[in-house]
Length: 75
Image (cartoon, rainbow, N blue to C red; front, side, top):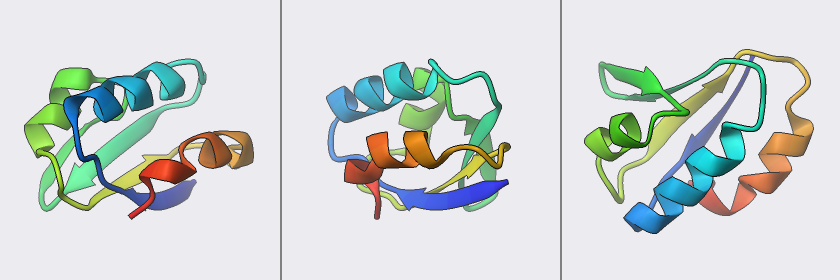
């Protein structure tokens, strides 16, 4: 499992993020406080809010390529 902190400034960034992570087979969760949502869910991530630091958990050991693609959202 790998983790990284991410933040989004606009709904467009969330849409772009979800389109990117949805291409990967492994499961991912997004956590903010006690709330945990599927990282492939646009509505779930929007519910966590914009301009907030969230924790992305990727349930795979082989996610270096994905981390490079989503590095621009790193918080």
